[in-house]
Amino acid sequence: MNLVACTREKELAELLRRGHWPHACSSELRAHVRGCRACGETVMLTVAFQKSRVEAADMARLASPGHLWWRAQLRRRNAAIERIGRPLLGAQIFALAVCLLAGAGLLVSQARHGLAWVSWFEELPAALRLDALLPAAFPQLDGRFWLLVPALATLALLSGVAVYLASEKR
Image (cartoon, rainbow, N blue to C red; front, side, top):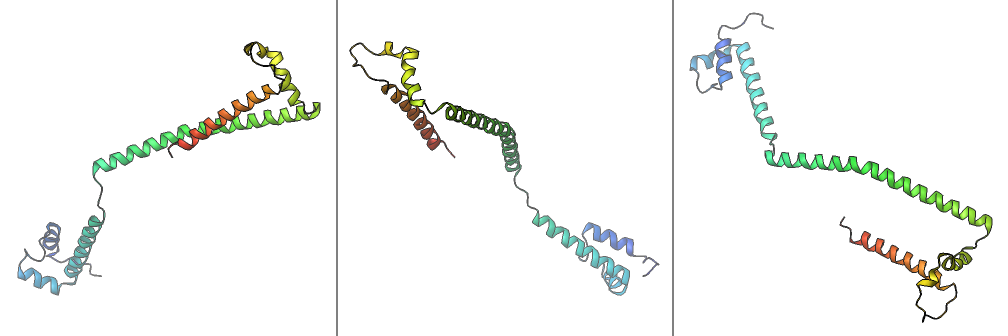
């Protein structure tokens, strides 16, 4: 290691900083750099670092500001939708759990009292006085007709849900 600095090192550093090496310098300075080890290393390192900086700058091609803004807005919207969707998913899971528990409770209750669903549905029109809704000319039907009404309503509801889910844009 050379502790004594070269007298021409400052001049050489200024030429290198401005980018004038080797074209805008004297032939005497070029000859000095070939003979001086400190100046030669300075030139070698500076040229290598400048080349590396140019290559790194060429690699970092940024997109247009409009494109960056659009992507940032899209990312912000997606994050907001995700934040909103988390509680909704939790509420849906909670509602499903409540419905399943209610259904299980109903099944347990019916299992204890005997499965009397058919007789319950046959008694429902009389309890709700639904016979008054039928026209007078309508032939007398037994209670099984009223089993058809909830079945058709359930079918209509499920078909509506199926059509909605099928037509939803994904």
